[in-house]
Image (cartoon, rainbow, N blue to C red; front, side, top):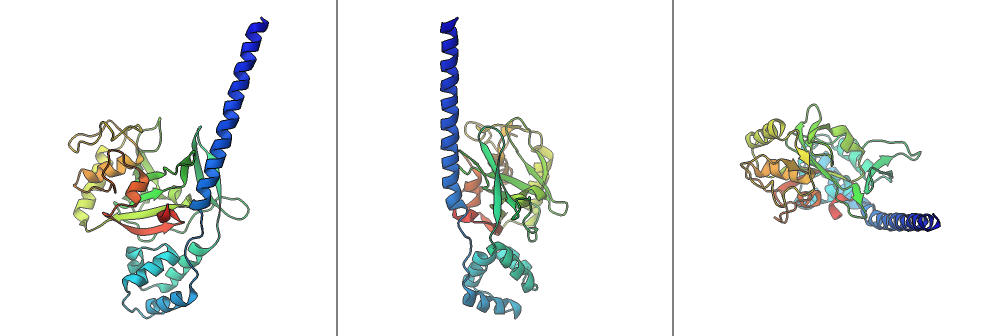
Length: 286
């Protein structure tokens, strides 16, 4: 009896040590990733901004350097700036929000995954301002989800911009389904991307294909490695980045930046076949 009890107690002790070690490593890695993920964004170079802002107000033609500065100050990519060109005051509003200090909280969902959300100074959940000129087929990426210090993030496709409907593969144990853009406005690190030089007819086909063929697919982290790469066969499993990549690959558009067998949200984020519509946070430097 004593021998069994001693073995049991040793097992419990080892288990507790493992759990404490895991939590310590998890916390340390999370702290490290937070340090570089939440560095200040933008630069408060008032003189340069004043010059560009005058050009905006006077409806003058902008240079590439002007667009780069506006992006660094507002998070607005060229498509968003052009959309707001007749409303420079709105661009200034986005700048004030983009450069303002923000708080966030991290909530563990499951054993490993941590989700970060924007909060006000009292810790209450808030949302980023609405995305500018969201369109069908736009791709949304966040890197505000991490596990053991790895910001693997999440990805989705906008299938109905007017209603704010997205399509995505969410997590293990759930099938791909429709979601809403509102949940993406809660992330501190998020980007909206758009395929370059792709006509609206192709985008419409991608969206229709996603809605009709890519809803209700089982989730698997292995998707795309050994299977799920044949454009002529609907995959039986998928995950968030593979889901978005596959929808476009079926129409000849490869949005994986390194062309490997594994595609991640971060690789989509840096694809040369996508242009930045808008970002919140330091996401492009991760």
